[in-house]
Image (cartoon, rainbow, N blue to C red; front, side):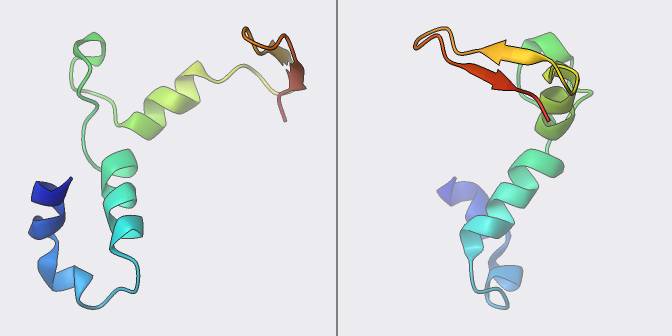
Length: 70
């Protein structure tokens, strides 16, 4: 993370929160690093693709609590 933050030095001087800038780049610009995605997806796209459809129920496997997807 430190290495990547230094690449944004000029922009960081104009922003109040460098972590927000880093997270924006990490989730919405860089390609996903997993070999399963062949470098064609960004993390946000992988997240959206894996989301269950709205209205479905997801069960937390550890505590067995149910959540409705909105």
